[in-house]
Length: 178
Image (cartoon, rainbow, N blue to C red):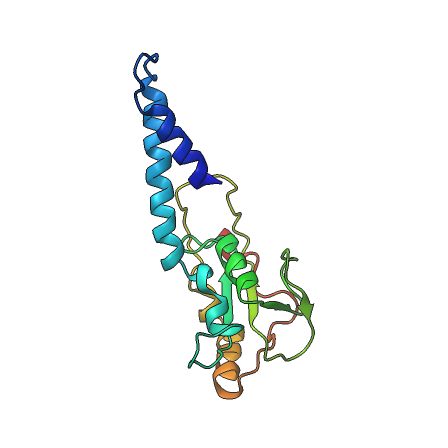
């Protein structure tokens, strides 16, 4: 739809003999929409979620399927949890028991699994719902610095299975308040 909108705006901005001139803000918007659409087409090819199924559920011919463990910190400054959730849905991930919160489109499973998994860690850092610059602290690496996260990674690499080593939801809700 966006491609069509940009094309129509550009066509509308093309001077026609005897027509009233198109206002400059409309021309600028049309050019911005066209540029954004062009950039988006390039981004889809490079963005991980656009090809998520290719490494786990629908591999490229000649390549084996791979399992995915995503450890994500709620409030991460470098990778939004919304993006991580989008990627998780793309490769058919599940949540393991005692998830920090429900994630739309992901079911929660109990015990150990060989499925693709999204594990969110909660550190008490509020996620902005608008486009804001990052704030301190940045919990990006915290899940992999926690003993529970390291044990999870170790088991995943050693056995191919994923389970929660947290007693309850993962993370420390007071850590981000320091």
